Amino acid sequence: MTDAPTFRLYGFWRSMAAYRVRVTLNLKGVAVDEVVLDLNAGDQFAPDFLAINPEGAVPALVEDGQPALTQSMAILEYLEERFPQPALLPSDLAGRARVRSLCALVVSDTHPLIVPRVHKYLADQGGFDTARFRAWASHWIGRGLGALEARLARDNQTGAFSHGEALTFADLTLASLAVPAQTLGFDLAPYPTVSRIVGACAAMEAFERAHPLKQVGAPQGRS
Image (tube, rainbow, N blue to C red):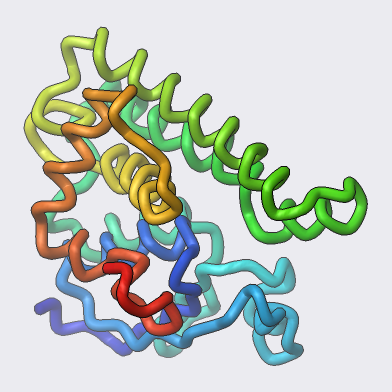
Protein backbone atom coordinates (compact mmCIF):
# COMPACT_ATOMS: atom_id res chain seq x y z
CA MET A 1 0.00 0.00 0.00
CA THR A 2 1.37 3.40 -0.97
CA ASP A 3 2.20 5.63 1.98
CA ALA A 4 0.35 8.75 0.83
CA PRO A 5 -1.69 11.64 2.12
CA THR A 6 -5.38 11.02 2.59
CA PHE A 7 -7.51 10.95 -0.55
CA ARG A 8 -11.26 11.43 -0.66
CA LEU A 9 -13.22 10.20 -3.68
CA TYR A 10 -16.72 11.42 -4.41
CA GLY A 11 -18.53 8.76 -6.41
CA PHE A 12 -21.69 6.85 -7.19
CA TRP A 13 -21.93 3.06 -7.39
CA ARG A 14 -23.04 3.03 -11.03
CA SER A 15 -20.72 5.76 -12.31
CA MET A 16 -18.49 4.51 -15.13
CA ALA A 17 -16.06 7.36 -14.51
CA ALA A 18 -15.82 6.67 -10.77
CA TYR A 19 -15.26 2.97 -11.56
CA ARG A 20 -12.13 3.65 -13.63
CA VAL A 21 -10.76 5.92 -10.91
CA ARG A 22 -11.42 3.25 -8.27
CA VAL A 23 -9.57 0.67 -10.33
CA THR A 24 -6.60 3.00 -10.75
CA LEU A 25 -6.45 3.73 -7.03
CA ASN A 26 -6.57 -0.01 -6.33
CA LEU A 27 -3.82 -0.76 -8.84
CA LYS A 28 -1.61 1.99 -7.44
CA GLY A 29 -2.28 0.84 -3.88
CA VAL A 30 -3.57 4.25 -2.81
CA ALA A 31 -5.87 4.31 0.21
CA VAL A 32 -8.99 6.41 -0.29
CA ASP A 33 -12.12 7.30 1.63
CA GLU A 34 -15.15 7.35 -0.64
CA VAL A 35 -18.00 9.78 -0.15
CA VAL A 36 -21.08 8.20 -1.69
CA LEU A 37 -23.40 10.49 -3.63
CA ASP A 38 -26.78 9.29 -4.89
CA LEU A 39 -27.02 10.82 -8.35
CA ASN A 40 -30.60 9.60 -8.69
CA ALA A 41 -31.55 11.59 -5.60
CA GLY A 42 -29.69 14.72 -6.76
CA ASP A 43 -26.93 14.67 -4.12
CA GLN A 44 -24.53 16.07 -6.74
CA PHE A 45 -26.41 19.36 -6.70
CA ALA A 46 -25.99 19.99 -2.99
CA PRO A 47 -24.18 23.30 -2.40
CA ASP A 48 -21.29 21.68 -0.57
CA PHE A 49 -20.57 19.37 -3.50
CA LEU A 50 -21.06 22.10 -6.11
CA ALA A 51 -18.33 23.99 -4.27
CA ILE A 52 -16.06 21.01 -5.08
CA ASN A 53 -17.29 20.46 -8.64
CA PRO A 54 -19.56 23.16 -10.09
CA GLU A 55 -20.55 20.76 -12.89
CA GLY A 56 -22.31 18.56 -10.35
CA ALA A 57 -20.73 15.36 -11.66
CA VAL A 58 -18.62 12.54 -10.26
CA PRO A 59 -15.91 11.58 -9.74
CA ALA A 60 -14.07 14.22 -7.81
CA LEU A 61 -10.84 13.38 -6.03
CA VAL A 62 -9.51 15.47 -3.18
CA GLU A 63 -6.02 15.04 -1.79
CA ASP A 64 -5.32 16.70 1.55
CA GLY A 65 -4.03 20.20 1.00
CA GLN A 66 -4.71 20.22 -2.76
CA PRO A 67 -7.55 21.59 -4.91
CA ALA A 68 -10.17 19.07 -5.99
CA LEU A 69 -9.52 17.15 -9.20
CA THR A 70 -12.41 16.45 -11.56
CA GLN A 71 -12.78 14.63 -14.91
CA SER A 72 -11.79 11.00 -14.68
CA MET A 73 -9.02 11.03 -17.28
CA ALA A 74 -7.36 14.05 -15.69
CA ILE A 75 -7.51 12.18 -12.38
CA LEU A 76 -5.97 9.07 -13.97
CA GLU A 77 -3.16 11.12 -15.50
CA TYR A 78 -2.52 12.78 -12.12
CA LEU A 79 -2.37 9.43 -10.35
CA GLU A 80 -0.04 8.05 -13.02
CA GLU A 81 2.43 10.87 -12.42
CA ARG A 82 1.92 10.98 -8.66
CA PHE A 83 2.34 7.20 -8.26
CA PRO A 84 4.32 5.96 -11.29
CA GLN A 85 4.20 2.26 -10.42
CA PRO A 86 2.68 0.17 -11.77
CA ALA A 87 2.85 2.15 -15.00
CA LEU A 88 -0.49 2.38 -16.81
CA LEU A 89 0.81 4.19 -19.89
CA PRO A 90 3.33 2.79 -22.38
CA SER A 91 6.86 4.15 -22.29
CA ASP A 92 6.89 5.11 -25.99
CA LEU A 93 5.24 8.14 -27.57
CA ALA A 94 3.25 6.21 -30.20
CA GLY A 95 2.05 3.71 -27.62
CA ARG A 96 0.81 6.42 -25.30
CA ALA A 97 -1.03 8.07 -28.20
CA ARG A 98 -2.71 4.78 -29.14
CA VAL A 99 -3.80 4.12 -25.56
CA ARG A 100 -5.19 7.64 -25.20
CA SER A 101 -7.03 7.25 -28.50
CA LEU A 102 -8.70 4.06 -27.29
CA CYS A 103 -9.60 5.81 -24.04
CA ALA A 104 -11.17 8.71 -25.91
CA LEU A 105 -13.43 6.39 -27.87
CA VAL A 106 -15.09 5.53 -24.55
CA VAL A 107 -14.63 8.70 -22.54
CA SER A 108 -15.35 11.28 -25.25
CA ASP A 109 -17.48 9.48 -27.86
CA THR A 110 -19.67 7.07 -25.87
CA HIS A 111 -19.91 7.75 -22.16
CA PRO A 112 -21.20 11.36 -22.42
CA LEU A 113 -24.30 10.16 -24.28
CA ILE A 114 -25.55 7.92 -21.47
CA VAL A 115 -24.84 9.85 -18.27
CA PRO A 116 -27.66 10.66 -15.81
CA ARG A 117 -27.97 14.31 -16.89
CA VAL A 118 -28.57 13.21 -20.49
CA HIS A 119 -31.13 10.69 -19.23
CA LYS A 120 -32.89 13.44 -17.29
CA TYR A 121 -32.92 15.81 -20.25
CA LEU A 122 -34.30 13.18 -22.60
CA ALA A 123 -36.98 12.28 -20.06
CA ASP A 124 -37.95 15.89 -19.32
CA GLN A 125 -37.61 17.38 -22.80
CA GLY A 126 -37.88 14.42 -25.15
CA GLY A 127 -40.57 12.37 -23.45
CA PHE A 128 -38.28 9.35 -23.05
CA ASP A 129 -39.62 6.67 -20.73
CA THR A 130 -37.36 3.98 -19.25
CA ALA A 131 -37.71 1.69 -22.27
CA ARG A 132 -36.82 4.43 -24.74
CA PHE A 133 -33.78 5.48 -22.74
CA ARG A 134 -32.60 1.87 -22.47
CA ALA A 135 -32.88 1.61 -26.25
CA TRP A 136 -30.93 4.86 -26.59
CA ALA A 137 -28.21 3.69 -24.20
CA SER A 138 -28.00 0.25 -25.82
CA HIS A 139 -27.52 1.85 -29.24
CA TRP A 140 -24.60 4.01 -28.12
CA ILE A 141 -23.01 1.33 -25.95
CA GLY A 142 -23.21 -1.11 -28.86
CA ARG A 143 -21.77 1.45 -31.25
CA GLY A 144 -18.86 2.15 -28.90
CA LEU A 145 -18.12 -1.50 -28.22
CA GLY A 146 -18.38 -2.29 -31.92
CA ALA A 147 -15.81 0.36 -32.76
CA LEU A 148 -13.49 -0.89 -30.02
CA GLU A 149 -13.88 -4.47 -31.21
CA ALA A 150 -13.02 -3.48 -34.78
CA ARG A 151 -9.93 -1.56 -33.69
CA LEU A 152 -8.64 -4.11 -31.22
CA ALA A 153 -9.32 -7.22 -33.30
CA ARG A 154 -7.47 -6.04 -36.39
CA ASP A 155 -4.48 -4.34 -34.74
CA ASN A 156 -1.35 -6.38 -34.06
CA GLN A 157 -0.55 -4.08 -31.14
CA THR A 158 -3.43 -5.69 -29.25
CA GLY A 159 -2.20 -8.49 -27.01
CA ALA A 160 -3.48 -10.00 -23.80
CA PHE A 161 -4.74 -6.50 -23.09
CA SER A 162 -5.76 -3.58 -25.26
CA HIS A 163 -2.16 -2.54 -25.79
CA GLY A 164 0.26 -5.43 -25.69
CA GLU A 165 0.75 -7.62 -22.66
CA ALA A 166 0.54 -4.98 -19.94
CA LEU A 167 -2.49 -3.32 -18.42
CA THR A 168 -3.04 0.32 -19.49
CA PHE A 169 -5.59 3.09 -19.21
CA ALA A 170 -7.21 1.63 -22.34
CA ASP A 171 -8.26 -1.46 -20.37
CA LEU A 172 -9.62 0.63 -17.51
CA THR A 173 -11.79 2.68 -19.82
CA LEU A 174 -12.89 -0.38 -21.79
CA ALA A 175 -13.92 -2.14 -18.58
CA SER A 176 -15.65 1.01 -17.36
CA LEU A 177 -17.98 0.81 -20.38
CA ALA A 178 -18.40 -2.96 -20.59
CA VAL A 179 -18.79 -3.90 -16.92
CA PRO A 180 -21.64 -1.48 -16.09
CA ALA A 181 -23.27 -2.48 -19.39
CA GLN A 182 -23.12 -6.11 -18.28
CA THR A 183 -24.79 -5.25 -14.97
CA LEU A 184 -27.70 -3.92 -17.05
CA GLY A 185 -27.88 -7.15 -19.06
CA PHE A 186 -25.87 -6.06 -22.12
CA ASP A 187 -24.41 -9.06 -23.98
CA LEU A 188 -20.70 -8.90 -24.84
CA ALA A 189 -20.80 -12.05 -26.99
CA PRO A 190 -20.81 -10.09 -30.29
CA TYR A 191 -17.52 -8.48 -29.24
CA PRO A 192 -15.11 -11.40 -28.62
CA THR A 193 -11.89 -9.38 -28.34
CA VAL A 194 -13.53 -6.91 -25.98
CA SER A 195 -15.03 -9.78 -23.99
CA ARG A 196 -11.66 -11.53 -23.70
CA ILE A 197 -9.91 -8.39 -22.42
CA VAL A 198 -12.72 -7.54 -20.02
CA GLY A 199 -12.51 -11.11 -18.68
CA ALA A 200 -8.77 -10.74 -18.13
CA CYS A 201 -9.41 -7.52 -16.20
CA ALA A 202 -12.23 -9.06 -14.17
CA ALA A 203 -9.84 -11.73 -12.91
CA MET A 204 -7.72 -9.04 -11.25
CA GLU A 205 -8.44 -8.12 -7.65
CA ALA A 206 -8.22 -4.38 -8.34
CA PHE A 207 -11.10 -4.62 -10.80
CA GLU A 208 -13.10 -7.04 -8.69
CA ARG A 209 -13.05 -4.67 -5.69
CA ALA A 210 -14.09 -1.75 -7.89
CA HIS A 211 -17.05 -3.57 -9.46
CA PRO A 212 -20.15 -1.35 -9.42
CA LEU A 213 -22.28 -3.95 -7.65
CA LYS A 214 -19.77 -4.13 -4.78
CA GLN A 215 -20.09 -0.43 -3.97
CA VAL A 216 -22.15 1.19 -1.24
CA GLY A 217 -25.60 1.99 -2.58
CA ALA A 218 -25.65 -0.74 -5.23
CA PRO A 219 -28.67 -3.05 -5.48
CA GLN A 220 -28.22 -6.05 -3.22
CA GLY A 221 -28.12 -9.65 -4.40
CA ARG A 222 -26.83 -8.96 -7.92
CA SER A 223 -23.05 -9.22 -7.57
